[in-house]
Structure formats: C-alpha cells, structure tokens
Length: 270
Length: 285
Ligand SMILES: Nc1ncnc2c1ncn2[C@@H]1O[C@H](COP(=O)(O)OP(=O)(O)OP(=O)(O)O)[C@@H](O)[C@H]1O
Ligand SMILES: [Mg+2]
Image (cartoon, rainbow over all chains, first blue to last red; front, side, top):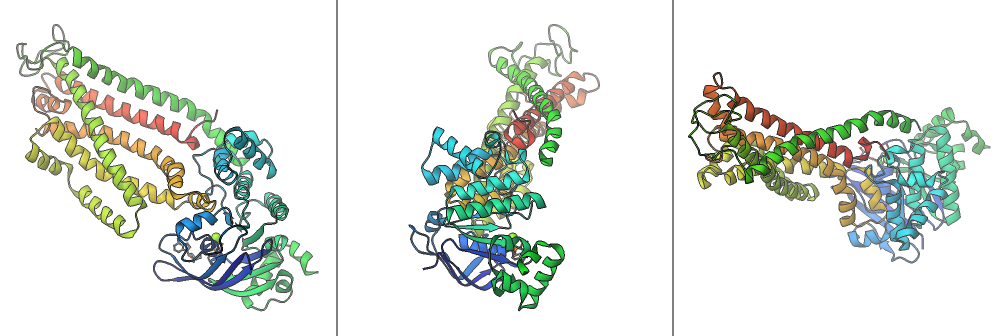
C-alpha cells in the first residue's frame, strides 16, 4: 500500500472556480516526487489539500489516502478535523516557502520549536530545552542557544528556514512536503538549505514531496516529477526523460527557461 | 544577516523612546489617579457649598477660584477626576468586554454568523453615540451609569469590528497554517498564536478608546446628558464656564487641561505597553 495515494484530486474555490483538477500520483514510503509548475498552477493548494488545510470556502474532491505506518489509513477529503489533527505532524507536515511568515513573529524561536517537539516526544522542562538545542544543531545552526532565545525577526532568512525545517522534522513525519522551501533565499543559502534538507530526509527515511517552479532545483533533490499547469497534471515521469524529451509544449518551455537560467541542468542531461 | 543589522540600527533609539513614553504616561495618569483617590477622603469644600464669592480668581482661600455659583473649583476638579476615571475605566471595561467577545465570535465564525454579527456592528456603528446616549438617558435618566452604558455600548461596536479584522488577518497568516500542519490542536492555536498576536493592537486601541470615552463623557455632560450636579464632571464644568470664559478663564482652562493630560497620558502608556508586548518593536536584551 502506498504512503500517499492521490486520485483525481480537485480543488474548487468558494466561487466555484476550478483551481486544481484531476491530479493523480502516488508516493511510496521513503520515495521522493517533485511537483513543478509556474506561479499559480496550484502547487500549494495541492499540498494544502493533502494536509486537509485548504483555505475556508475551498472544497476538495477526489481521493487523497494517507497510509502512514502506525497510523490509521485515512481518506483526507471528508475526514473529520479530529482525525486530520492526529495525522498532521506525524504522518505528514509542510515546510513553507516564506520562512518569515511561517514563524509566529511574537514567539521566541525556541518556544515555537518546543511546541511540536514536546508534543511528539512527550518532553518537558530541561529535557525539552535540550531537545530544542539539539534540533537546532541538527539543522546546522551555530549558536543554537542564541537562536532559541531570538524572535524570528532577529535571525536571517536562511536561519529562519532552517528553524522551519527543524520544526517540521521535529514531528518526524512519514511524509514531508516542502513547498518551495528555498525560493525566498539567495542562491548560496539556497544550495546549503537544499543539501541540508536532502541529507536529513534521507537519514530519516522520510518520503518527500518537493514543490518548486524551478526544474534545476528539483533535479538536485528528486528523480521524478509531476508537471502542473493551471491546476492540471500535464506530464509526469523521470526528470532525466522530461529534460531530454519533454512531451508537452509547456514542459518544453519549462526546460528551456531552466536551461537559460541554470547551467547545473546540463549536468543531468549527460 | 542584513535583516539583523537593519533591525539593530532601528532598535537603539526605540528603547529610550519606549521607556520615556511609558514613564511620562505613567506620571501623567498617576497624577490624575492620585487626585481622584484623594478626592474620596478629602476635598477642600463641599461640592454643593455655594458660600464663596462668585467667579473668584485663583488665590486664597479658593486655590483655583470659584465658579459662577460660588462653588470651589478645586473641589469640582478633584471630583471631576474621579468621574473621568470612572467613566473611562467603566466604559472600556463594558465596551472592551462586549466588543472583544463579539469580535472574536465573528472572527472565528463561519459565514452566516460572521455576516450576522458584521451587519449588526455596521448598524451600531452608524448609530450616533449621542442618539444612543439620549435613548439610554430617556430610559434610565441621566447618571454616571447611563453615561458609561451609552459610551460602552457605542465603543463595543468599534472594538468588535477591530477585533474581527485582527482575528481574520492573523488567521490568514502562514504561521497559523504552519502550526496546524504540525498537528497543534485548534484551541491551542488560538491561545498560543491568535490571541497573543491580536492583543497588542487591541490594547493600544482600548487605551485610545479610554481617552475617547473621557472626551465623550465630557461632551455628554456638556449637553446635560451626563451625571447631574453637584458632582460636576470636567465636561459640565467646561459647559458652565463657557459664558464666563473671558472674565474667569480658569474655570474653562483647568478642566480642559486635565482632560488633555489624562488622554495623552493614557495614550502614552498604551504606546509604551505595545512596545513591551511586541518584540518586533523592541530592543532585545
Ligand atoms: N485563498 C485563495 N482564495 C482564492 N483563490 C486562491 C487562494 N489561494 C490560491 N488561489 C488561487 O489558486 C490558484 C493556485 O494557487 P497556488 O497557491 O496553489 O499556486 P502555486 O502553484 O503554489 O503558485 P506559487 O508558485 O506562486 O506559490 C491561483 O490561481 C490562485 O490565485
Ligand atoms: Mg505556492
């Protein structure tokens, strides 16, 4: 049984506009899939639909089945809030694009990180504080004590994203969804954060759904992609095949623009 | 890295400004509170005592002079402080309680309840405070309680609308969704993230409302809708002094100045408190 099985997923806005339609894919435990598409193609909504956290007014149709080890197999569309909350964090969690807005501006970083850590591992007091520092060290943050005491605006964008990754990993989910986790960062930091994410996800054997509009970025993380356009899946397959022989004109334009912008892509066309 | 240096640059002047703001506000409000407290134990004359000469200038035995009926102005000012604070605190307590509760309900509600509350608020806000006050007075007679009721009700609509907007805005932010993706239960999201993010703004607004309530009471009294004499509020003192403002200016200036001192003091405190509550506005450690 697959960890995540999405069949004919559709998302409709409150006004009835179809924002995502008929998206299907599966993800095995420990596997990785890239979700690529331009801005507004429905990538984030697909991620939120998997979490059962669509904005109010939006409705999901089709089937999203999560089957994480040790947790009940659940049909996300139509599940109760209570069931969903049991899955969030443990079965699946998300790292968002904009690390500044994804952290509570009024809460110290350490306390925000302590929230999922304490809940997941039943820690409190000094043990919890040690776990917070350890989690910050794990995402290669130097000065973890200072960062734990800082507010989000007092640390850099790269440091914030590392904190957000630490928060997601603290849940030890079976599936991690990374929604453009490096788009808001500058290029050098981007590479570091990608490498970090890559290493930590492998080390823990998590499955990864990696969302990006950038084929070059996706190609560093995963071998398989699903191409989204206007809420529809237009192409799916191995990154190598898609780069070498894009079948859909939209995919071809993605590949071309990636070639223009990024030389690393040449590496994988060899 | 850049962000930190920028923030550092902004912080240093902030701190000194915050502490002075709070300190000055506390001194100003503290003075008025002290006067109000003393008025419970001691006032120079009976407020109804008309034995003094009329419209006396400041001096002895009437430190601030007398009004046109020969009543001691200092006595009236002291009792006025008590009334101003009672009205301010009372109506903010009433308006804040009703408003925050209604606003939270609307903010978290789904469509129809939100729509209903919003429509009610629009009507209430469109309703002039003065008309509301006249209705309340018609039902309950002019008294301190009526003034508080009218001002508090009018305030509750404004506070509710603000609260609703604040809740909606916080709820739409990524960190709420992010917190929920890690499995934080809804009540915890509300107490840990939503409320802490709205109360600094609410607090400042309530302080502003307290200042406005004191002013509103002054205008109600000015129109004869406030607490009846001989317990004069600053507003009714202003009203009584208006005919004689040229010959005996103290009767008009003194309550006006005290009103301004209280309103500014409360706002300075609110400003200082917000800086304490909001770390993005504060210098660290
Ligand atoms: N809260 C919302 N209400 C109405 N429409 C929305 C909402 N959020 C997103 N949409 C619409 O849904 C579509 C898909 O949005 P989505 O956020 O999934 O795009 P995306 O692929 O993640 O884009 P980006 O790369 O810019 O993040 C867009 O057309 C967007 O305008
Ligand atoms: Mg997006």
